[in-house]
Each structure stands twice: as structure tokens, then as C-alpha cells.
Amino acid sequence: MQINLGSEIDLGSLFKKQWVVLPAITFIVTLLIGINVYKAQMVKLELVKQKTEEESKVGELINLIKLQDDRFSVYKKIYSLKEPDFIMQEISKLASDSDVRLLSLTPSGISKTAIFQFLPLTMRIQGSYHRIGKFIEKIEASAYALKIISFQLNESGASSREEEVLDAAITIYAISLAE
Image (cartoon, rainbow, N blue to C red):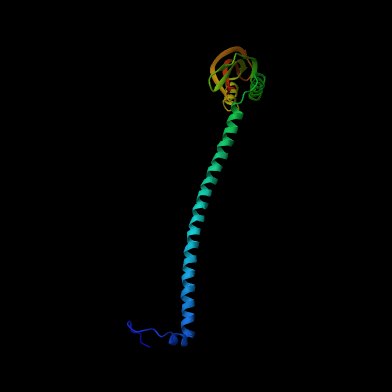
């Protein structure tokens, strides 16, 4: 069959061959619909990917905030206001654990800044050079914010059979957040 552009199309002859034309038209229409549905689904898929990436970033940010909150809670615990009696008991325990003799422990008045407050504590201890060093190490490693301000080491005049006994005068600050 030959079709001339200037000639008329005989619909009757097309309908006679409908067993060929109808499936071809159905296939083309189905193909066009499928392509449009595919394009729409790809656009939706891209939107879902973008939302997933955004939610992932938000999740990471939430985890970071939780981590910072945990760290801040620890910070607040370390620097929260402790009663002088509590701090003095802790220092007494550190002295006992270090095997030094705590001769005196005297708190002074609290000084404050905009953020922190400082409780000075003056103490005199007695022990061997190494035990006093162990005590100083325990103060510095304490879970509480204790800062050594001054340290003076003197001979005590007393001695034990094994080691020379020394006197130490120590001033520390117990640091806490200002209220």
C-alpha cells in the first residue's frame, strides 16, 4: 500500500486492517502513558532522596546536640556548687588515701566572678616527700574542680624510721559555677 500526501486516506481500508492498527495504537498510547508515569515517579524519587538527606543531617545535628548536652551536664556536675563541708571531706579522703596526715584544713571566704566562684582552702599536711606528691597528684586528678594556688614544703623536724617527714602548707581553690 502506498500513501500519497496529496491523496485522501481511506478509513475503510484502515478498519479492514484493524487487527494490525489497533494493537499498534494501544501499544503507542500505553508507552506514552508509561513514560509520563515514569518521569513523574522519578521526580518524586528525587524529592524523597532530598528529604532523606535533610532528615539525615537533622539527625546528625540532634546527635551532636545530645552529645554537647551530655558534656554540659558533666561540666555542670563538676562545677556545681559544693558545700565547704563536702569539699573538706573529699580533701580529707584524698589525704587518707595518699597516706599523709592532715593537720589542718581551713576554708576562707568565697570570692566570685561573673561565671565562677572560688572557695579558698588552706591546709597543712605532714608526710614523706613521695606521699605528699601523691596527695598533690590526687588533688589535681580529682573529679571536682580543685586548683592548687600555693605550695610550700618545709622540714618538720620529725622523722620516721623509713622516711623523712615533711610539712606542707597548701592553698587550693574549690571552683564552682556562680549562682
